[in-house]
Amino acid sequence: QVQLVESGGGLVQAGGSLRLSCAASGRTFSIDSMGWFRQAPGKEREFVARIIWSGGRTYAADSVKGRFTISRDIAKNTVYLQMNNLKPEDTSLYYCTAQIQSSWSYWGQGTQVTVSS
Image 1 (cartoon, rainbow, N blue to C red):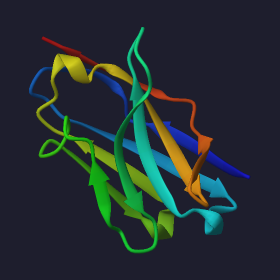
Image 2 (image 1 turned 90 degrees about the vertical axis):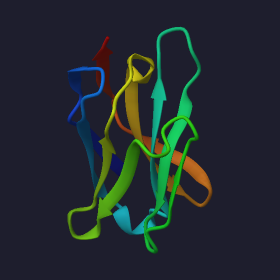
Image 3 (image 1 turned 120 degrees about the vertical axis):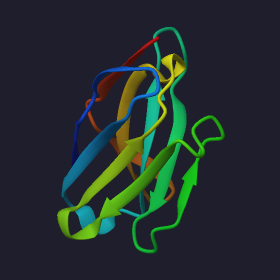
Image 4 (image 1 turned 135 degrees about the vertical axis):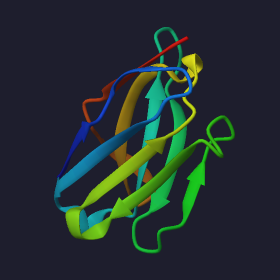
């Protein structure tokens, strides 16, 4: 089992920044990648960014490229999502997830990000 706890959400004005954190515990040695998804009310959950745990290679959705950066601290078993130049359409519940053997197997409880115009 892997437990994920997110933090760092909040209310920010458009153009502002936030940094989300996600601390993993438990069987962290089994994690292949960690990622962030988001879900706005009435919409499907969508991919935001992903980082390969061992090598550090990153991937991001086109909608956030150039604004959001995913990173990790292996020693702390923590993944971060630095979000800059936030837009109202970024308002969502953001979820941290851990990928094990090609499956997003574990999810955090979510942290709310609200961007005001």
